[in-house]
Length: 170
Image 1 (tube, rainbow, N blue to C red):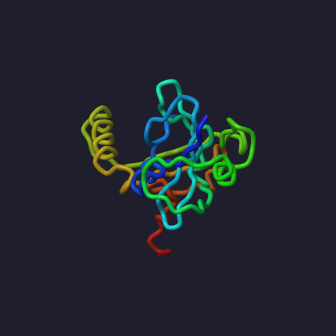
Image 2 (image 1 turned 60 degrees about the vertical axis):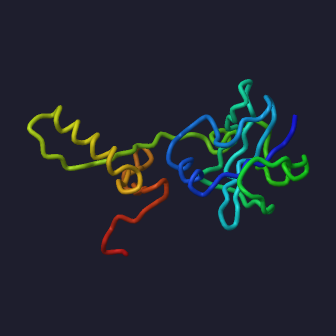
Image 3 (image 1 turned 180 degrees about the vertical axis):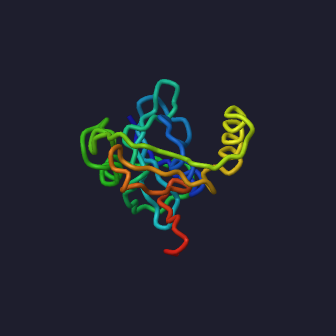
């Protein structure tokens, strides 16, 4: 079982932060091989660990997209072989196959996008809503999230990151 560092662009990392996926970005690898998923930021960070499935697709085994770890090596974008020691030094500590949910525990979160819509009927309002969501997307449309039962902890997120929506606090 070989070890790899799959380095993706800042743009690809941004996409990983927006949408949930069981598959990690990057090249296909031989089944069973493991890869550190590295974002080409300044400085670079490890945002996950993946293992190639039978089709060679990279499946997350550890997803660190919300809490990436520093990565010391300077590698260009693409797939690079690395030795076991480098893999172990950069990978999150814990048992193989441990996921972020195993470590932190899952909670129930409420997520909301509220838009005032003018329409002649409820069905038209829903169509207009989905048109706004599609056209504005995660770059412009804030989503509000809070732990179930704690509305006072509500936070706004834009592009997968917390964003202050109070114009008086800028």
